[in-house]
Image (cartoon, rainbow, N blue to C red):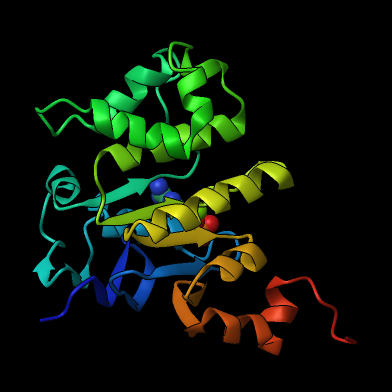
Length: 239
Ligand SMILES: Nc1ncnc2c1ncn2[C@@H]1O[C@H](COP(=O)(O)OP(=O)(O)O)[C@@H](O)[C@H]1O
Ligand SMILES: [Mg+2]
């Protein structure tokens, strides 16, 4: 039996427009996998399709061997696939604590101990737990979005450009937290334009261009590859 996430020959898009032209991708237990690629490549469309927000035209998506591609998004959440979308989407008028509680909406039991656990990853959220989320900095809002996702007890955490718009120092702490989440045994699928840092963190990577995977392999191999260095790591052809 295949375990983890398995995406096979996935085609999807918007209306008549096909954006993803046959994607094959895997995330195995314990893995942190990154999908890098330029703006408009289809990275967010891929994540939206995996989490059930877009229905694929064809292909298969499986989590621990179970087909997800015909399930509703809320059912997919209950299966343990949690998506932190681009732009964070926290509830800015609710408090930090209320936002975190939303992450646990599928559960009836007390979440006090899980909250303490999340506060260990994100001490700043504990400090600010009664503050309105809209008053947080961009980095803190990203932490809140990830913390909320963790309260849903993901098997697979899917992150769409968590570093977007954040200062380098903040990006480093976000990536550090992602590494710690993976160390807890959660599978992570990380979409990033920040190729260098994403590959630095990941076990394996895929390069997506114009809706197709053009390169894949161990993250270190991609970091060493001339093609990736020229296209994504800002190195000139002379070096
Ligand atoms: N809601 C939408 N409706 C129609 N086209 C869309 C929509 N969202 C994205 N697209 C198009 O799909 C393509 C891939 O976009 P996207 O998945 O957002 O790429 P990325 O996340 O890699 O920047 C782009 O050509 C974009 O214009
Ligand atoms: Mg995107």
